[in-house]
Image (cartoon, rainbow, N blue to C red; front, side):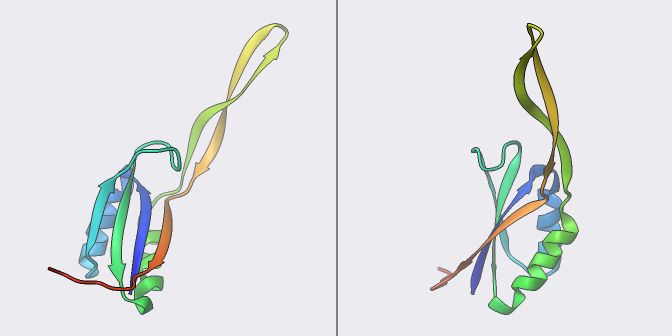
Length: 107
């Protein structure tokens, strides 16, 4: 058994949860904060059988959106004035961590 911890944009999280449910997966959404992925993201915890991991990845890929966002760039001084150039950065649709589950129980 595997635990797939997926970090997705809040903009995609409800769609992802709906698709997972329609395909028989049980998932838990957890709101997140931190510096790993800046901005509104959620962690979705999904348990699945070893042989279902690739199918799960395909569902995730099909239901998250890559975005280009503007972030503050390097601050520099040119001719005595301070410039702060915004930089376009591609934000991935999801990041997935797959963890082996040694034991699983429902109580």
